Image 1 (cartoon, helix red, strand yellow):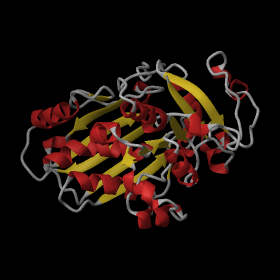
Image 2 (cartoon, one colour):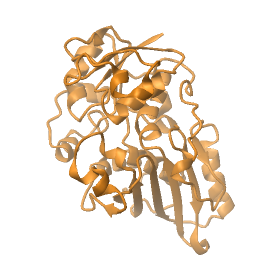
Image 3 (cartoon, helix red, strand yellow):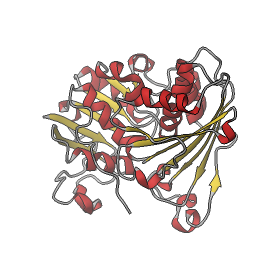
Length: 345
């Protein structure tokens, strides 16, 4: 059994990790940390885990994280890099759900996150944890930088087009929407029920920290200089993410060939569903699952390709993807603990 520790288990990605790992056939939940909730049974905070998770929260100084095989960081940015070196020295693998190990460009990280990067040596060896595009590297990694939720949809949506070189990479547009849980579990005015419900708004229009992360990864797919216009929106739902992606074709190609391009790219991917051409994937079709669904459109058979992408922002957009990476790192079946059917209605 893989001994698993979780740092920062009181937030939404933390409890989602617990939900997934509690039913994982090869995992033994060993430690979960929280300074504020030290001594509190996890099931007292999250009754959904009663009878499944018998751990109590413990402060980081009490948790025996160095005795784990892998530690997940479901924490604010900056926490994982403060502890990664000690864990790695003890032979523990690290999966960070924050941004500490996502971007190789330290200057860009410090610009967008406003904190110094304290262990660039670990960053050098860290692997970006998007299995569909980076599977082999993940298998041998000691440190994973789990992708952001929005970047996951943008990369998987644009990848077949950029890889084939059939679109103008300098003029990509991503119009994306997320449920309120993407902001985390915190008491903040903008995400209170009476503030976020029954309304719709864009945010981060002048610049969002997921933009440089996404561009860095998209740039690996093409020799063209990537230009990305990304606008996120907050929608009044708890879970879910919908990204509408636009790209301009630079070659003649039929709709059948476009569809085949995506189907071939993801034909062996257990968590990417390429729907029939012209479909309209819904966020509820992925709720509480690790599935990402996408569909292609081409208005008036013109030069613009539209890719619709949906996922659960807490699962494939965060914790589920992290578990997917863990499975690969330990030589397990990649789908282990992740075959939940989406919840409807």
